[in-house]
Image (cartoon, rainbow, N blue to C red):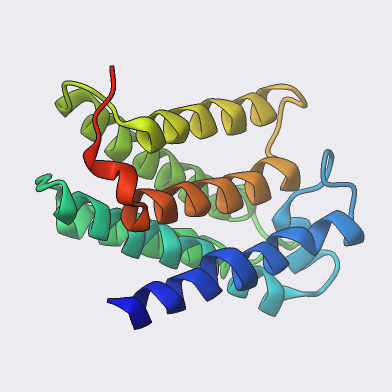
Length: 184
């Protein structure tokens, strides 16, 4: 378990934050989104690595925590949602494509991230009391939703904040010794 914890530590506290901070130097994160980096700036590898890094943390850490809490989740749904996130980055946006094709990556990403959040909301619904890091995860979901609503569209600020904050909170849920202490 120590080696696994070390690997997750490197991923969540080093690699993922590096991938999440790069857009803050490249673009206006309050206007553009991650797709802009991949398509308009011709960095599709960065976009795909960022999506894989984010989704892998969401996938593995959620499963580890749900297993620890003996929560019955739908494995195939969770897998589909977390695979759909990076797959959405593989669908290119090109002006010559049909409008529905250009929007397909957006709707796939929204559906998968929204489904991931609904999975966690269902978990929260099933719990009688939430522990401290679970409450923080709820606040992260609210904060990132706020980042979507303020500019009125999906921005890199919302995308990278969601990736970073959700993964860090899930890491704390899985590897913190405080997860057994339930508070009101």
